[in-house]
Structures are given as C-alpha cells and as structure tokens.
Amino acid sequence: MSATPSTPPGNAPENSDALRERLYNTTAAYSRFVPREFLNLLGIEDIRKVELGQQVERKMTILFCDIRNFTALSETMSPQENFNFLNSYLVQMEPVITAHGGFIDKYIGDAIMALFPDSPDEALRCSQAMLRQLDAYNDGRQRAGYRPIRIGIGINTGIVILGTIGGAARMDGTVIGDAVNLAARLERLPKEYRVSVLISDYTLYSLDRPDEWAIRFLDRTQVRGKQGSHSVYEVFNNDAPSLVQAKKRTIKLFEQALACYHVGDIGAARQRLVDYAAAVPEDSAVHVYLERCNPLAESYGPPRPETMPHWHEEYSYGLSTIDTVHQDLLANMNALSKALHDNNLEATGALLDKISMAALKDFEFEEREMGQSSYPFLDLHARQHQRFFEYFEELRREIESREEDRIYLIFRVKRFLTGWLVNHIVSADRHFGHFRRSKTIPDAA
Image (cartoon, rainbow, N blue to C red):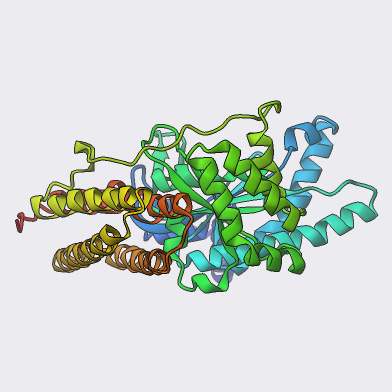
C-alpha cells in the first residue's frame, strides 16, 4: 500500500511560491545590514555565499559625515530621545547618498561612512545635497521647538580594500586602507575650521570637472602614523551666494596670509589675516587663524614650519630608472624654492624647464609600464599626472609674471610640487610597485 501524501499535490506550487517569497524577504532583510552594493563589488550575488577573507581592491571615494557637538547634545536627552533623534536625522541622509551613486557602509554613532565607487564628483555633489537636506530638516526642528544642528563632512579618494573580516561565528564587511584613514581624519577637521566640507588633495586631483566647484586651500594636516603632510581644501558651493563670491574674489589674499602662517612668519600672517577679515568678515575660517596667531588665546599654536623634503629610502620605487628621476625632480623642486627665496629669477626659468621635461618623461614611462602590465588603476594614476601639469603651469605663469610675494610662491611650490611628488610617490607609485612585485614583472631598467 502506498503512503498517503501529507500535502495535497495541488498545494505544491503554493509551497514553492511561499518559499521563494521567504527567500526574497530574507535577502531583503539581510541587505539592510550588508549593503547589496558591497556584495556586488565583491562579485557576490547571493549573501549565503559570503565567506571570510573575500576581498577586492577598488578605487573609491570615501565620505565621512558627523553631527557637530553631538556628545553635548545627547547629554540633554534620554536614551530613547537619543535614538529617535538619530534615526530622524539619518533617515534624511540615506536617500541623498543613494541618489548620488553612493551607499552607506556603516553608521558609527552619529557618523555616517559612505562609499562612492564611480565618481568623486558625485561624492561632492552628494555633500552639497546633504547640506541642503539638512537645511530642510532644521526648518522642521525649529518649527517643533528644537535647535538646529550642523554637520561636518570629510571626503578622500584612493585605492582601498573591500572585504570580509571576523571569525567563524561573526564576520563583517569593511573597507581598509590609507584612503579611509585620511577621510576619517578630514571628518574631524570641519569643526575646527568652522566650515562644512573638506576634501583631500587626492580628491581634488581626481575630479572630472574641478571647475564646477568652489574650492580653496585651507590647511596642511598630518595623518597619525604617516610622514609628510596633506593639503586640505574647503568646498564652499553651499555657502550664501554673497559669501561664495567674496571667497572666490579673495582666494589669493587668503592664501597669501596662510602662506606666511605656514612658514612661521606669524607677525606677517596676523596682519594679512586682519586685512582679509576686513574684506570678508563673515568668513569663519579666517577668525580661526586669527585666534591661532594670538599669543594670548588658548588656541595659540604657531606651526612648526615644514622643511623642504629630501630623498629618503622609503620613497624608493624599486626601479632604478624611476627612482633616479624622482630624486632629480625633488632636488630641482627644492632648488626652485631656494631660487625664489634668493630672488634669482634667471635660475627659476631653467629649473622650471628641467622639472617640466623630467616630469613628462617620468610620467610617460610610468604610464607605459602600467599599460604593459595591465595595471587596473592606470586611469587614476594618469589623472593625477594630468592634474600635476595643470597646477604646474598655473605656478609657472605666476612665477613668470614676476609675482613679488616670494613667501606665497615658495609655499605654492611646496604644495603643488614637492608636496605632490612626495605624496604621489608614497601612495600611487608605491601601490604600483607592490603590484609589479606581486606579478613578478621583470625590471625594465
């Protein structure tokens, strides 16, 4: 005798449909904790196939955003009010990030870490849209009797490793790399300068359309555990239109004051900052620098002037052809600074030509090597080379126009030439060096 089936045959399609629906709902639920975009970047379609240690290298723009003075604000609320407030704020920001091609990697208390795989320009557009959304959110808070909040945003672009870490019972997706560390550092700085959005020089050099943005140099900063400094830039498109125009009109005056500050001439810096503050009194950053220059203020702390960088073995690329050119470039850039300091205009022209020709030869060689070895980040590397020449030509025009402010010119050589070269060597060039060695590509030297 055959067994009687426990489920009527006619119900099989219903059970199959129910199973598919449960799987769909389960996948959708998991995607709220593990972003689908993250899995896609790892090449994983089914979350059940995620394994510990899966990883991939990608060019990425990282955006960190947090609420200013959140700790003080949260102390005035109950735990339930804290969670309600945070969620009411975060639910405003998530759609903005998604609409600009980004996705949220994680929430860290009141902070958001978002990733933009495709375009640094979209990350900047997202930052401006977040500020506009914040204005609308604050309007609602004020109508409800709450005080408005402010946020700070830091953005950096670079090569990162996305992957899974953890143990057998608990693992997580994460993004690691120097690019992430610098973005996190930038997130903490907007509060210090009383501005909204800061980007790194790496993001500036990676933009598709830099002319679309209102950007100015703001400071030099160091990342913990790293040698050398990075230039930090303010993006101020979202300021009041009158302030945007005032900042654009006085960019050179502002940078001349900052140049004096960074070379340690605090007296000259203070006077130029006073002149600038008279022209643009609503610019918050200038008041921060004025406080730094006041020896009676608690925040007084003149910088230790950066010395011109000299060749270190850690800058070595591992290919003698390139290392020699890099050493010569650095020596000629330092010589250019000295010639400007000594007002030796005859020497500056010859040095500019040497730097231009050596850089062109070096960049062509590097890009040819990268193409031959199928280096996946050739486009990113070449974009940085392109930006170098754009800023180099801008600097050349200033020098050849007989710009009289030598401190200003020397500081721009430091930012656009020596600073760029050192950071490029220890990040982009070093990454390709690791790639070459991993592929056991023979030296062409």
